[in-house]
Length: 597
Image (tube, rainbow, N blue to C red; front, top):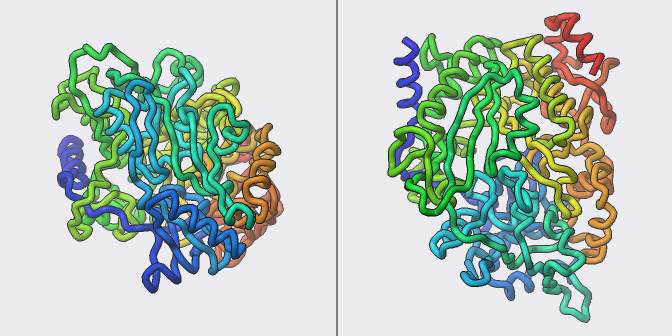
């Protein structure tokens, strides 16, 4: 029975070839390029607000970019840079009000120069990770460390500090391999209202621009330092998670590109043993990560909203509505077994015959074939495409210092012991991905060697609908962020992750000084970025649904509104956030554990 169900799941969510409808432009305008809205690729921001702008421009050259910035600067007009696919969950691309200007880097997509001898590549800011690693490989070069999703632009990666996984060398963040950049910033009348600034490794402001949040100006060009092309060998090994805390501390030192996927409710961890090998090693492997492939829209709708079979219970909305924890756990086991059975998308010469899989780095480090742009009218799409009834989720991502990561893992394990089914919902989304990040000189980069925890989980279309085991999920979020001082990913997370975040960065004042120098009139700033940077209050908000949407944190002296939500106090941090209708179901043991934290 289980084997038949597993085959059914595979057929249901199978890849439908490389043909897929590409994601729509995140900027939509009512009249040509005016009266516009902007969102992210998921179709909605954490606070569910709509971001508007009066106009969008699509420069194709540095000259056109300078002209756009100069016009905004001259007229003291709010402006934000926007990327082709807009994968940041947070509102970094939202200008204030409705009269702002959006500068899309969609057409700044050219590779300008590849210096094979000097091992550098210069690209425009809208060039994607896929373009970079492909062109580098074709010229015998490699960007060694990068995110796993190739639909990110170099400007977007630098704006948010995007990274892969390593504790080796300079670290896993792409911005560590930037040796020079050109950024267009506002200026005075004497400079034509816009200025091109060239920052190299000797420039004192480079560490501000490496992770910029888009508040310094618009990146025009970026030069990356590359390495000779090499091969990688990948093997996945599944173990129980009993000693996960100890393993995490040492695993990243042993394997250059290693990461770990954790399935807490199943008490399993999947270790990715990923190392550099000789370029002469046998193998022509590639990595087409299964969840990043195009998927049949009808199948996604079935998985999300209807009854597949009485055995599978893979219907998230039905499971949430009926509080079907057992169904989620059965579905999680099937999904994780499927992914393991197909080696997560690894193949050697097109098929998987066993580990290790060996191949050139540019074919193994990132994927995302659902972006392939043959338009099939949404018959297939990326699983999270907002135009179909597909995946809809919250995402929490934070890094915790290696010195305390074992303690964090043990706290999560204690919560799972109290309610073993509580994290099956995470496992449907392939568990908790743990990647390694290193300390950075970037002012808003990571301050210590750490493990980054990426947690993806169900989000309801109804902002007032509580999630199954929401109290456990939010306990984990708050333990990581507040008890262990986790640094949230700038491009992910719900609002509460950014409460007091700027105080966690020793070089915050240096960043703010550069920001004031480059953009004294704050045309690239917005209310949201000011809140993130601690310049304004308001990261948390007070409204119906705020607790369930991660926009506030609620106290022991809370009371429930008629809509089964909490009344929250903006800006105040408490130990826990529970859904009132479920508090009575928790055991005293659970309450005591929470009080202890």
